[in-house]
Structures are given as C-alpha cells and as structure tokens.
Image 1: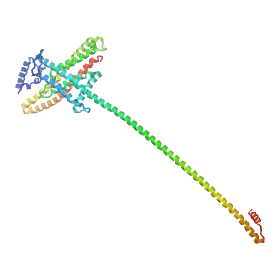
Image 2 (image 1 turned 90 degrees about the vertical axis):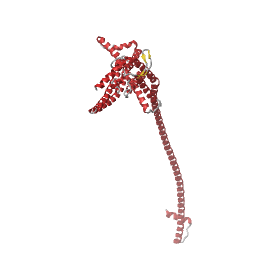
Image 3 (image 1 turned 90 degrees about the horizontal axis):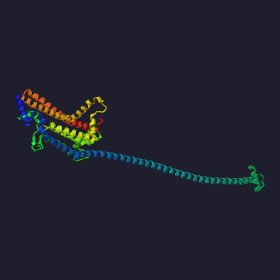
Image 4 (image 1 turned 45 degrees about the horizontal axis):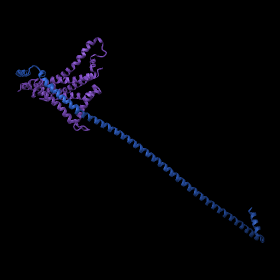
Length: 183
Length: 253
C-alpha cells in the first residue's frame, strides 16, 4: 500500500510538473484556450446543423403526422355525416314506399268493393225482374184457374139441375147461379 | 503497471492527440477533451439523422425515440418559458443533447468525460448565459436593469436587496458551470476509487477478496447512479437555462 501510494505521488508530481501547476488538471489554465476554442467550434456547428436541418425535419414530421391525423379525423367525421344523411334518405324512401303501398292497397280494395257492389246490384235487379215475371205468371195461372173453376161450376150446376129437374137451363143462368153460390 | 492508473485524477488529464499549431496564443491541437466533444456532437447528429431519414408517417423505434426527445424538450421549453419559448427551443435542445451526450459517453470505460473539465462547463455556462444576456438587452434594453429592483419592496431595504439581486444574477453562470463540473468530476473520482479498491483488495488476497467483491458491488451501484446523474445534470443545466431565459423575458415576475 505504502509503495503504491508513493508511486501515485510521484506520478502526480510528474503530471503536475508537466503542466506547471499543482492539484487538479482541470485547473491548469494553459489547457483552457484549446478546449474553449474547440467547444465553441463543435457546439457552433452542432447548433447550426440542429437548427437548420435536423430539428425542422423532426418537428415537421411530428407536425405532419398531427395534421394527417386531424384531417383523417375530419374526413371520418364528414363521412359519418354522409352516412347519416344516406340513412335518412333510405329511411324516408322506405316510409314513402310504405305509404304508397298502403294507398295502392286501399285503392284496389275500393275498386274491388265497387265491383262487388255493382255485381250485387245487377244480380239483384235481374232477380227482381225474374221474380216479378214469375209472380205475373202465377197470377195469370191463378186467374185462368179461377176462370176454369167458374166454367166447371156452371157446367156442374147445369148437370145438377138437369138431373134434379130434368129441365135444361141456359148457360147464362147456370153461370149466375154458380156465381151466387160462390157468393 | 502504469503508475498513473492508480491516480483517480489521471482520468482528467488532457492529452494532445493530434498536434496542431498555436494560433494567437491558442493551442489548436485536438486533445482527448476536444475529441470527445466531437464524438458527443456527432453521436447526437448521427442518431437524429438516421432516426429521421425515413420520415415515416408511422415511426419506427429510433424515430419514436428521436421524436419523443425533440417533442419532450420542446414542451419543456414551452412549459417553462411559455409559448414564445418555442423560438429558443433549438438552442435549448442543443445544450441538452450536447451535455447529455458528453456525460453519457464519459461513463464508458477509457472514454474521456469532456464535461468533467471546468474549461468546458464554464464555456457552456458562458454561452448559455450570453444567450440570456442577449435576450435580456434585446427585449428590454437598459430597462433590463429594473430587474434588480424588486417590485413593492420597502425603500428602506433596497440598499440591501439590490446588491443581493445583482450578485445572485451574476452568480448564475458560475453555479451553472460548477454544478455540472463538480457532479461529473466527483462521480468519476468515486467510480475510480471504488475500482481501485477492487484491485487493491484483490491483491491482498484472503479476506481481501470479500472486500473486493463489496467494492465491485459498490462500483456497479455507483455506475448506475452515475447514469442517472449524467441525465439529471444535463436536465438541470437545461432547465436552469430555460428559467434564466424566462426570467429576463418576463421581468415582472
């Protein structure tokens, strides 16, 4: 240890002697001008390259990215608005179609109902005519039948009178008599 | 064995690597200190250049780191100085990345730590403070001196207050320089001493091996701490520069 220390001391001494001063090498002022010169040169060049080339490039990159993100976000927002509008349009088209469909259906129903009513009226009218004709026929048949009944009554009267009295009566009298019994 | 390797101050020796002539009393020789300034600056420039070369809209790993660093320092500048601080951002970024690169480079074995040289930290402090002074006089002209007369303080204590304000202002570049210098030099001395303990105790043998193990653990722990200090001191230097700029921009505060 002691030996090492003495070696160190001599080395220190040699270094100190070489620089013409004791203590720390940093305090040897003869070394300052060169370091100051080189520091100013290196820092000056360093600053200029940073200021003129590299920092604008990197700052520009960051700014460009921010702008891209912003413009993309804006575009997305616009597109979303367009989607909203398109959906709105689609919705209104559907509603319109639905209304038109309902209208068509109701029109169709109305026309069908009108057809039905017309057909019903027509068939009712023709039926009534048929019924009327049939009733007329019945009335005619009834009247004819009544006529025959009167004739038959007159004939029966004539026959009864002949049988009972043996005298012939005229047709007119027989008819009258028959009519009287009728009454 | 090189005797100098056991001297914890040996690592701070400035040695000439490429001898160059002396011009106007300034020895232009490239020293290890100058070399590591260049390596530090070149590392930052190369990294930022490579990271931003592809200019990808979706950044890769390196581009993300570069953008994070740039954006982080810019936001820091704006948060301390305000929105007009963004104009000073390139200078602030240059200061921060340059100091950080030199601090971190110094942690590699056999690498020189330029920021452990008082000449370097003092020059950086003078440059930073020079910028502060330029801003101050550009903004306010001679009205800048009103800064040393605090608002609303009683007239009676002015003779005391004004010198204090002036001295504290003048001390700023000194504290800037000494804080960085002291931290970097101190950390490296402690590292070196722990590293020496490992070898010395190892040479003793026996129980010494145990001690060497403890010293090794200590050296590892202090290396980790020094990484933190390297970042922290670059950050402190930067944020203090921001605060000083803000001070002279907004005198009212």
